[in-house]
Image 1 (cartoon, one colour):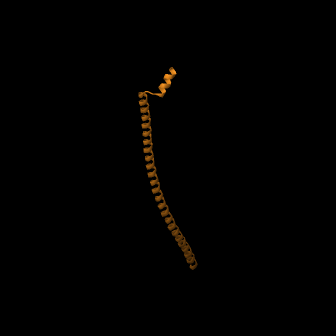
Image 2 (cartoon, rainbow, N blue to C red):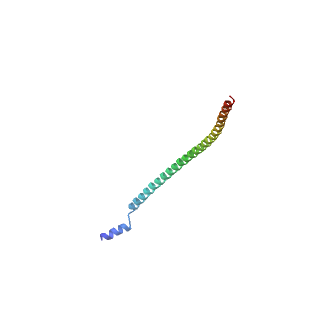
Image 3 (tube, rainbow, N blue to C red):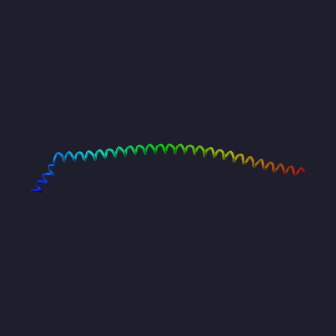
Length: 103
């Protein structure tokens, strides 16, 4: 008979037990909802942070590219001037040799 009462108890739960069970489910659902909202906020914050970091990296890359270009142009001008200087030195050596021959 105890088994009959227990099986009957499991098959026909009391209204208070149903209410308690529903409250538990509702509480779990609210906790899950809060977690999902928190995860969503965190995801959006990380996405924004990553976007700003990428923008900064792009900006830095553009600046570095421009500096590299300017340095290359400067080196080309210096190289041109150095070749002109070498010619001048060669001319001055030749001039000295001519002067020595005249004497």
